[in-house]
Length: 182
Image (cartoon, rainbow, N blue to C red):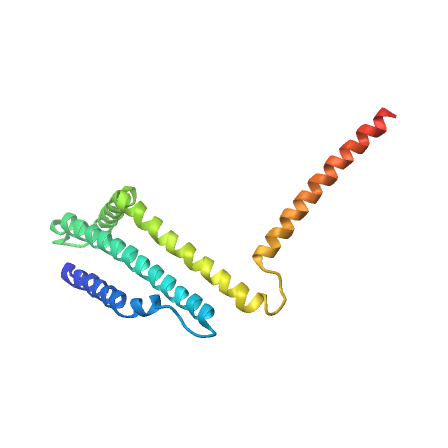
């Protein structure tokens, strides 16, 4: 792949995202009307959450692709003069070692950068939003109508159980203390 074709892919994605934000993105932000207003708003929020996750994933992919292209270019520059002549197992081993070292160093530099950290933070944030939305929709549309316990209800039960165990433990120690006084 040439560098220019990669840049055109990035340009295409950027243009798609701009068009989405100018058209469909605005429709998603429109307030819903009618009896199913609340449900429609939740569905539109989910669509928007998915698009945010998709866009962050594409940005992350794009960044990794550019680092990959940079590493490939470095390997080509380092190995081009040595590739002339007879090909032997030693040359293959040498090429392999150069390839591994170059890719490792290039990706290590990228992963140490602040850009990588912020990119991963943004991706994880959108992923968590998407997972939270999916959990809420699962609870609301499947678990509650089937009269199954939701995560929130299970968490409340666990808190109550913990509190009861703690109280029983305290009362047991108080009873033992009273028995010892007799």
